[in-house]
Figure 1 (cartoon, one colour):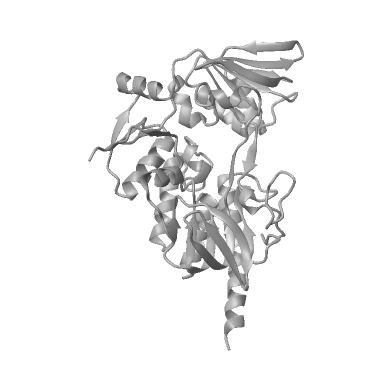
Figure 2: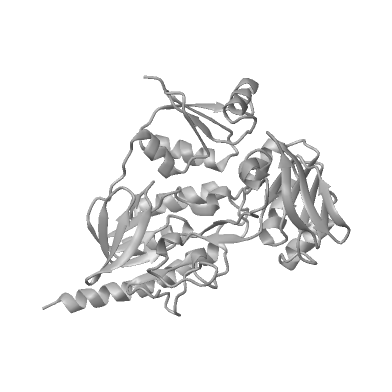
Length: 396
């Protein structure tokens, strides 16, 4: 039988995740590093009509998936992950740092806990090249390396993971919480904890969707290295993420131009100062991006500002304008704020009884890895009280 071929690069976190998924499920594959094999890079561009997004997973039937989620890989391979039981003490929705932390705490107390995740365990931490502010790692640690530690800890502690599976809805079912899963299962839990995190927001301007992966990107760790040695990149946004990614990209190219729609950068003072001191980062404030132009590749970024309509011609552009909560599956069942974040009380309880929320998906959180983990602990402690009360009520 012919093997699957994974085209990627060792610095690419999505490549690492896809390889981990295939290996975990015993699926044989061949790995080709496009940075070391010019013919492989040419093949990827042929498959993608000129783009170079990785990983590109090519199957024996000739079809391929570009930057697939774990769920997409499982669907293509006919792999259907299933929960081992129908009833749990706690169902955790989301396998990022918050969800895995909640799972570890629940398993340590000998609770039956399931952690469900569709995209890939680790969340946004997997796309962070280096984390310098997580306690216990004075020299910093790569995002994928930290995620591996989270996953190992959760599995050794007895957490049941359910990968490549979405929770499609949550509802009360008598005295329990019922979750409908994308694999067709319906499971119940005494309590549920939502920790689905966020994804990067898009601009929604002309040309953006057509050029995603062909010059327009949302993850510098994933796609930045492919521009190493090029002349110019643009970063859209002015917050912490935009400044952090601009500093990283400035190590790869001659110049980075930050396009910020407000009158100044909004990142923390330390980051703003680092950006201003960087010799090859130029900041344009008070400008609004109106669109992208290009065919197979990006040709120009168009924007308006104090001098009217302008455009620049970077080799690539990275968009960091905020986050969108992964909460669509909760609409109609759990109260959300106007931006889609989950509303909770001081004890992390949502409007749906016995359903709690933690991490970036919750209203008012700091959107930091370490606070997401701490938020998950607080939410779990509240969920544990709920579980204990139900157990006590069932004692004759």
